[in-house]
Length: 299
Image 1 (spheres, rainbow, N blue to C red):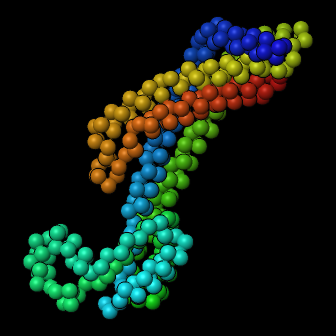
Image 2 (cartoon, rainbow, N blue to C red; image 1 turned 90 degrees about the horizontal axis):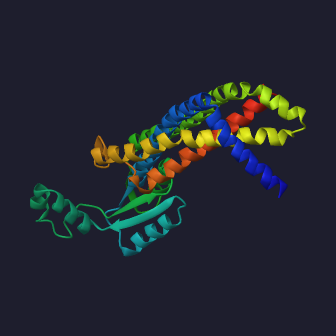
Image 3 (cartoon, helix red, strand yellow; image 1 turned 60 degrees about the horizontal axis):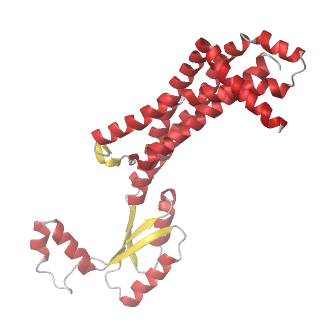
């Protein structure tokens, strides 16, 4: 019960301190708000880059062309070999007549030329269209398929696809690196801002120590105060994140520049991002206060 009373008193003192030192609290909140806005924008950008990367990777297809003279048993053999590969997400077989029909549907020229082809005259080949689980291993998977019996040709946009996957992987890493760096900078700025608040109350803390207050009872109100400042500082970034992204998404109709770059749907994305921003604000505020007390007042 004693610890609950102490905690309740610490929460009460923390709220009083926020309003009693309003100008310094406002400075801390402003610092948190500005940096969290940048963090929120970076999180939204990095998650959209990740989503775009996954969309591109999910569209990557290995097209496998079989030998012209394959029969049903040969096709079954190739199917079984494909099933045994580790990196296969899904596959679809298309016989040459189906390929012919799809090409005719796409172009009036193809339809005119191919209409005279009989099943025996059809020069097209039976194919497999394969989706992979891990796009970074698509080259290795394609090489394994190429070595299979009854396979004449394998195509997946080699060269360009490999470069594209590496480029997006690098962009993802940079985006997450920026978010982490911003969080570290936020902590540093808040520590220095909150330090001013705590330094102005050094005499108050000295009196508390003289009357026998424990380190825990002294530090707890400041940590809770940092949590409150972090929570207040995250309100504006959350509002901007929610309404800003909704407006941005509607303005571009869910795409950025081209339909290839698809944005993440607002719901539940904006709510998840808002929760992340609030949590970062609270944790950073607590860490900032705790570090300031420990480093600058040596409590």
